[in-house]
Length: 445
Image (cartoon, rainbow, N blue to C red; front, top):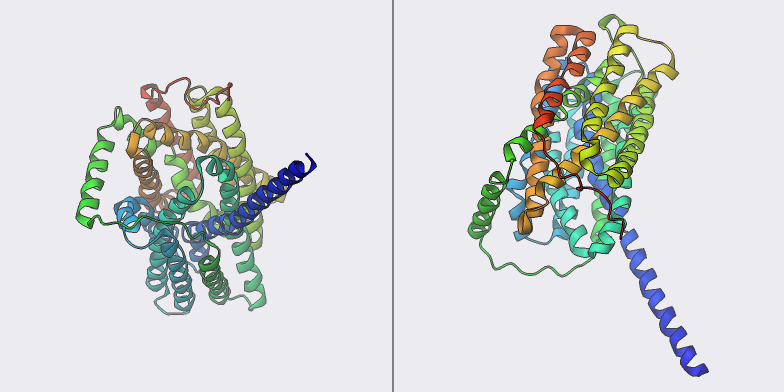
């Protein structure tokens, strides 16, 4: 009897050791992978806005150029079949990370050039293309390497480290640019060169690290031709546009963030701009703390609260309140532009409130994309990817014209326009039909 008990204890310890080993292996790549996924995107889409504002570009050009850089994420479903068919996802991940490191190094070098605008945009475009490709492979290896139960368990971990990337980029890197600006005798060109060299080094180190840490999963050899792959892609594309109420779905994806898509391109330039131009004249360190650290933290809290509420009551009940939540707090920038307070508490509080509303309201947007693809069968993942493409397009098109509008109207009138951009979605809401039970957590589970 004692021998049997001893054998069971040995087996139990062996099983626990296997589980512990598995946990260690997962923790060696999920946090670093999603941190590395987030940093290039945040740098291209947000930190670059701060850099170009510091380097003296007009707001119209900043908004237009950085909106163009979003296009790889809009159209990434077009080349996702190639990523799946050629090489392994593991190979794509560390190769794209190394390429992004090289592209960031090029961008750092180009900052010192007389033609820095065109050359740095070319460097950032290379980063954007590789980052979008990296996203396809990273999400793929996450689903291939983990069971459905583990995917659910670690989804919070991957999301948390993506948020860490946002704070690192919008907060830490912008703050560092101000620090190096002061250390380098007031030269933003040198300051941003140093920052981008640091990002380049991180991406190269991450690529080398992931050669070792990523799981070596078995991926079936594909004997399918690229022609058949793209034929299947065409079928997926057609079935997406044949979904019931697809016109309503696409309209929602394009209108839901109409105001936020424009605000995000001008928020940092407004905070940086001189008082004489209607801005807040904040330093890079202040913007890094208010917008990139406190703001992103509140965005995260808003997103968590939104997820809890939707899981309790379902998407339908909270869809309209969340439309208001993502739009009405934009009024904080209108108030800042009108009153231009000097109190750090008021400025930081206004930014925090806007970001909290954005995080809370964005929950409904993400759930709506899941709702679109919920009954797509074998096309579910692909249809969700198409929905994210329209999400990116809904940010890109309004963002392109936002800087031009601000230059014509000034900050106060521009922020009033941003607030008014909620009206189309509010009017269109009456056409949106959502299953009342969608999103509710199964109480029996």
